[in-house]
Amino acid sequence: MTWISRVRYALVAPSMALAAGVLLSAPFVAAPAMAAVGYPTPGGIYAPFTNCPLRNPVMRGSVGGSATGCIASVNTSGAFTINGIPTPITHPVIVQFGVWDPPNAQGNQFSGGVLPPPDGRWLTDSPEQIPGGLPLLLLCPGSTPGVQQLCKKATTSGQTEVAALVESAGPITDFFLTTFTQPVKIHLINPLLGGNCYIGSDDDPIVLNPTIVSGNLAFVPDPDPVRFPNVAVLEVLDAVATDDTFSVPAATGCGPQGVADDPINTLLGLPSPSGNNHLVLNGTSLFADDFSDGNQANELLEAFHVSAKASPSGAFLE
Image 1: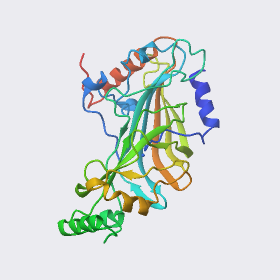
Image 2: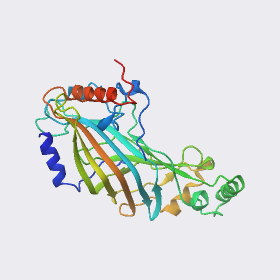
Image 3: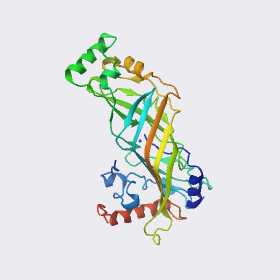
């Protein structure tokens, strides 16, 4: 399948699931360490792709003419709602990884699947404040002595705020141009809850499958079409992705000896089955692709290098 046919496919199927990264869900945050990814921070149309495994030996073994490239999804707003209780998304949620095709791909796009980013960070997120904070989560003043004590400590110490941080709970899978599956867990952050208060876990994650319901597709070729005629970025701008199908496991590890688990689970109705929860993500998804017959990873990496040298902030080292 050529680049143009892939673009046409995306144009006729705009409602397919898009990487959300909660997606998975402000300005793009660049990766500061060149050594971690093996190339300088790119510029221009490649600026979002700061964490692509282009130097991974597996990715460099992709066959020519198939789909090899970098995915970056940047979501800047939305909401994560569990049983009718929303947590607004106000900080960027960024997902990055690579896709490749093996030598035996035989025309099946993305049959090689997904490769992790060099630093292992599938998901980059920031904590979001939960409206109502700890008094709401604990149903203060509390129905048991342990919870009542936590409520009192929260009030007297002023430690009432609770932040929710969405973390990766495993690798991304099932990618095909505008869809993939991402397991996550939610870290509830407050000193009185301890450091292991989570909704979901690596063994029992929240499995997200966001679906784009609207967006604008753009094809952006490399600025030097003579040197890089087969390199481009496919953008889905102003994308709105939703998911109503995921279930949410119970909270565990909250408070001394898990004393806060029950009120949190009671408030949120956890575990919460599919259909009771809702995700909305607003942002942009990008796919940097080389569709030449040569070594696609090498050519895309070279385009990144050139963009870094051309960018005022690029720190390219010869």
